[in-house]
Amino acid sequence: MLQYIVNNNGLIEQMRINKLNPDEDLPFIKELIKGVQASESQHEERSTNKPFLYEIVVNQLNGVDVRKWDYIARDCHMLGIPKNFDYERLLEFVRVCDVNRGEENREQHICFRDKVADNVYDMFHTRYTLHRKAYKHKICYIIEEKIAEALRAAQRFPDLLVNVENLDIEHYTKLTDHIFNKILHSPEPDLNEARGILEDIVHRRLPKFVGEARLKEPAQWTQNHVKDSWRDMCRNNNLNAQHFQIYDLKMGFGKGGNPLDNVYFYNKRDLNTAFSIQSYQVSSLKPVKICERLVRVYCTDMDQRVQRKAEQHFHKWCTNNKGTFIDFGPVLDDDDSGEGAY
Image (cartoon, rainbow, N blue to C red; front, top):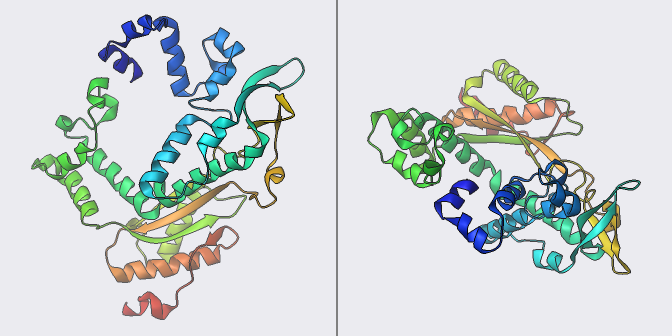
């Protein structure tokens, strides 16, 4: 993508005018965007002398990078979700320090003042909040799944150019949200399936959310184990397992582990010595668990009696497996479930 933008806009010459070497600097920029770690870089001089450069755009070491700051600020603003961290304050107290990573092994890393450790933690918590309230919200998530299903169904119609794997980069840059309306209003018979899915989205004919449960740690059940257990429950309670969709989701502060473990800090009394901070040093109220696994069930049967019955048995299923699940809802009485209508 970057190479196409550079070639299409004549940026090679602009790089030379600005005293950049396209043969050397362009691959380096690509590495920064891709998120290559300094130890894996093809540019030995830069990765050895200035490894901190690889922590600015996409930071694979600890996840504190401007890419994350950008989308958190944008999405919190557009969604009206409070943003608990201030990236401008972090920028005021950021510097490059030598980090001692063993005998005769010192590397330069981006470090923050120790007094903004709580602000760094808030960044990870805000990211989790966005995933919980927006990116993986129960309705947003199923709409996203249905749109993906519609695009897969539309791949059989080549004129739409929705098959990303077979697109050249020029057509890929033109693949925007307009494809939704193009499929929705197309009279082509080959798009009947895809068009029907999008019409269901527009008219809110979505799979009914049955329930959500969190797996206890350490989670012993695999995704297949969860699905097999749900199918067994359906078979034992006269429910059609084909009418349900099960999703296994993970949400948390990052790629596992304490988000502060790989973030380095410095103190005002010694601006050049970096050190790590444990979460309990920030606050005793910080959670021990920073990642959770959720199981969601949706019902594709539009019969409300089936939906209510499924909701009742979902909570009973969680209760029967209380060593595995933490249920987020009450167990419904038979009188409330609509089961008596059968």
